Image (tube, rainbow, N blue to C red; front, side, top):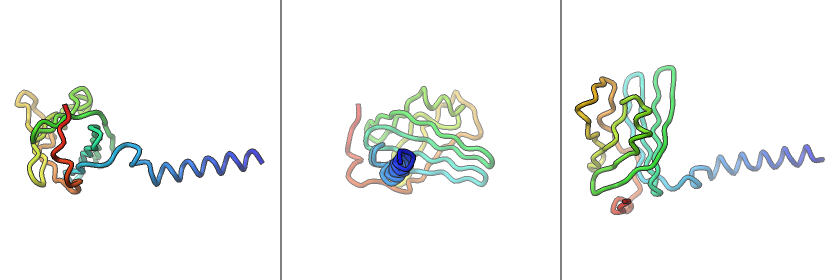
Length: 132
C-alpha cells in the first residue's frame, strides 16, 4: 500500500508540475527567437524580471537564466550569466515593435553573435513596467 501511495503522489506532482510549471516561474512578458539554418536561439523575458536564453545547435543545446532590467526601450541582461554563452549573446537589447535588436559591444568579435531576435509572443500592457 505505501508503494502505491508514493507512486500516485509522484505521478500527481509530475502532472501538476507539467501543467502549471511555467506559472510558478512567472508570466511570460516577451518570447523572442532567432532561427538560423542549423541553430536557433530564444529569449524568454518574464514579468518578474527574470529571463531564459535557449541556444540550440545541430547536435547540442543549452540554456542560461538570470535577471534583467528594463530601462526605457532597453533591456539589460545579467552580464555574469551572458558571459557563459561565450559571447554569442548580447547583454543589451533595444526593444522596437516586433524586434529585439542587440546593442553590440564592438570590443567582442564573434561571427556567431545573435544580433536580432523576432518577438513571437508579447503580453500586452506590461511593456510600461520599469524595473530598476
